Length: 169
Image (cartoon, rainbow, N blue to C red):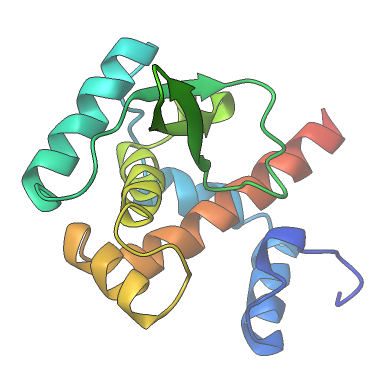
């Protein structure tokens, strides 16, 4: 059973990965996710996603830098950027250097649970204050979304399940 590659869970301890392999082997992973996350969110357009991000930022990070663009991106590599991507693009305009902050969320997250979308957005917003994945970064994520760590783990389970069901379809 340990031969099953769990690419989204590589940073987790082996005993936890073995529990996930057992859920997969006994066909319990899909039902677990469906029961825990039965709904999908309604944030379907880039405009709605921008408004959603802006509201979370206004609620938790008022003093953070402004976000200039938020989009769903069909070209994001989910393995490398499983939680989205934040960028800062610097341009010279009229002798001044202007930086634009952008957040890109993989398009596959249009059809996920609202908790998963919020977790991804919270993760990317936290990078406005903390660039590294350090303790302060994860404390901020947990502040913005209590239960952040469990939801991140469950999102990784969702990606694993999605990959497995694509292979068998």
